[in-house]
Length: 284
Ligand SMILES: [Zn+2]
Image (cartoon, rainbow, N blue to C red):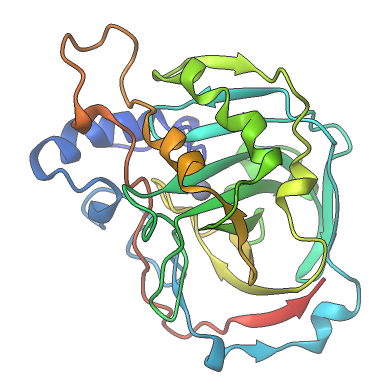
């Protein structure tokens, strides 16, 4: 399998479909099987996600020189089923992220989610070995590189905000997305938001974040991401996560007898070795 720059994208990948066909088919293990055998960057030394150990993180005062700040649009335009996850599109003009561990200005490209087959698994990052039920990623690219695809080639090319979803009370803002998942049940289906979803309301207003140097968690796993993962999870209900689990990885009419194996479940990559990396702690 040969990967070219044209195939690179995050959580949209046609490559995931190829993966499903070539790997998942015989082992059923999806992202758990991303290894050097399949992907150029997977054997590297700054792979993501990781198991974060709070007692080993370093408080870094440099993160507070300029506070981490985002200026995101207050609306989300459409929701897409990529066949691997849901992906939300936003008006990206002027949607910026800067400060904290970032030396340049980044622009929001999209946000998407990873989840599990039950409420106890689903997040990509885990804390002391414990997973959350889901994890939303806000994907931003470094504007000094001129384009998203160009940014993928550099160690500081992307900055991804990670938000853990923990099962608890219903999240009213996320409901505006959950009510659309039935309309994007199949791969490549897309639906416009009827009720304005403000992505800012899915992000914490204050609190701490972990930050470290890592990679894309989907093929080809480029080591181009400055990760910023918020310590405090956002609460969502069990029913809201269930609506994600009803989404399918195949196109409409792609199978005469859709079954559980066609549902999008466990679309998270398991944690990889931290190696020599330091995880720092900053505050909003
Ligand atoms: Zn992701």
